[in-house]
Each structure stands twice: as C-alpha cells, then as structure tokens.
Image 1 (tube, one colour):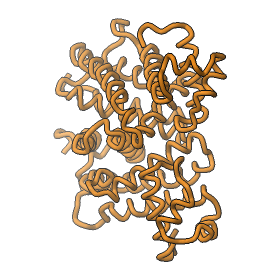
Image 2 (tube, chains in turn orange, green; image 1 turned 90 degrees about the vertical axis):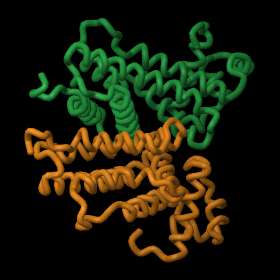
Image 3 (cartoon, one colour; image 1 turned 135 degrees about the horizontal axis):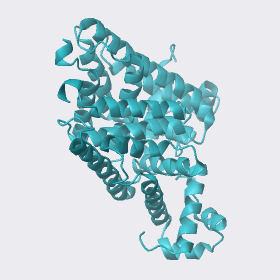
Length: 197
Length: 197
C-alpha cells in the first residue's frame, strides 16, 4: 500500500503482531482492531474482509523487510549485497522475526487458501528480482563468477533462506547457524573460482 | 512407531489425508476417526491427545518418506543418491504431496506450539544424516568434491528442499521447476571441480 495513512499503518503493524503470536489461522479481526485501538468497522472499511486484511498485512510485512535490505550504490560489492539482503531475514530484533513469521504463515496458509497465492507470487518475484539484480551487479564488478545463472541462483538462495527461516522460527536451529549456512551457500554458489579470476 | 498395528496404520494414513486437506490447525480428531472408520475413543487410547495424534502422524509421514528414498548399495554414486533422496520429496503422486504437506504444516505449527519441536528436531536430524551419509559416500566414490563439509551441505540442501517444497505446495512454482533447482544445487554444491579430478 503505497499511500498508507498513519491509521492504516497502525492497524497493519498490529496485525503483524497478532499473526506473529497466533498465526494466520488464529487471526481474529476483532483482536487486531482492539490492539490497534480502532473500531472493527474501520478495518472492514479499509480492508473489506479478513482475507483482505491478511493480504494487506503480508504486503506491509514485505515492505518493512524490503526497507531493511541494503540499497544499491552503497559501496558494497554485488556479492556482499546478495549476502546482506539474504541475512536481513535473520535479524535479532523482534520486528524482523515477526515479519518472517508473517511470511511463513501466509505461505503455509496458501496451501489451503488459493486466494492468497497471487500476492505471494508477486512478493516472491520481487524478492527474487532483488537478489538476481544484486547477483548481476556482482558479475559486473567481478565479485560473482561470470557463468552464474542469476535467476535460478536467486530462486535457490531465497528458497534456502525461507527453508532455514522456517527451521529457525520453529526452534529447530539457532539463528547463528542459519546465518552461517546462508553465508556458506552464497560463497558456494557465487564465488569466482580461483582459476577464472 | 515401529510396531504398528494395521489399525494404527489406517488411522495415521487417514490423519495424513485430513492434515493435507485441512491443515494441522484444522485437524479434528472426530474427523480422523470417521475417515478411518474407528471410534474416537480408540484414537485417544492409542495417541492420548490431539497433539499425540499429530506427532504420531508426523512420524508416520516421515517413515513413508524415508521408505521412498533410495537405499544404499543400489549401485548409485553417492552424488546421485543425494539427488534422488532430495527429489523424492517432489513426486507426482498424491501420497508424496500429502507427506510434504504434513511436514510443512507441523513445521509451521511448531512456531506456536513448542511441544511439537522435539519430534521435528529428531526427524530433521534423521533426514540430514541420511543426506550427509550419501555425501560422504560420494566423497569416497569420487562423485563428490573431497573438500565438502558434508553436514553443513546436507543442512543446506534439505533446507532448500523444504523452502522449494513450501513454494510448490503453495502454488508459487511448478513441481518441475523445483526439481530443476534441486538438481542444479546438488551440482553446484557437490560436483568435483575439473582441476581436482
């Protein structure tokens, strides 16, 4: 939502918190309204339905995540930017964790609710594009091997991050281990071979 | 459950079907009993609680998945066995898909239900061990590069499969695309460099 009012932002921040605590399937519109301090009718006015609220919350969570990713032209090599973009999902702060829970929840719910898929597809494509363009930038600046398939590689790295994020959020692995594995994957997938340099 | 009766197996197969259709959080014990054609009291007798049934269903799903993985000593190279083990999660049959949905559902639910984590951890460790031992076998037979960190690599490849599986089940990518990406990841992570051969 590009032109969000402060009140919409307050509602969507509350919705992220509720989903992070209760899951998408435990989300009650009344609860979000209560936590945002607004009338339930206002939520329906803005978002039309419970699913409309879930979709807007996913979009808001993705925008928060995208804002946390390093911007182009900040002096990083392409490969470092790929790594920093992927590691942004494993921040120690509660906001980053909540954003990841929302993504995992909407993804898991979409197995049973096809009406969530279109927006997920768009969000996943945006994220893949962001990583693919950092990879291409790395090819141009020599930090990434020249024969990489940027798109396939970006799809793999983002899917790996989602898989590791799900394990981390479910308490199967430590956050630090997830970060190490991402860093090693970036090296393994992107590093120019010594002979090629 | 090593010593399962036919009736237990029937119940757990029914539970896999119910979770694949309604999700873990939509699972009603009465519904599983109905589909298995047994009394609700029998489910409580065998599994004690709804969560006990969910845990037993996860274990049964994992055993079904493990049975589908290629066995050692079947003439495959280690690297081919890694690939075949990982690709077994993307079978075209409904049974494979249902097993993957159960895994994804229990993993997503464990974010909110810590009592599901211990068993998930054990199941994830089993799967990682299976892939790590195939990688080590590949180092021994020359199909995998010698300097691989088998455990970290197995963690990454299984997490990648989970991430791609979640996208496939949510309708974000095609099954064939997921398979291609897994195959490419196995090559990228494991193939011996030409110079090293």
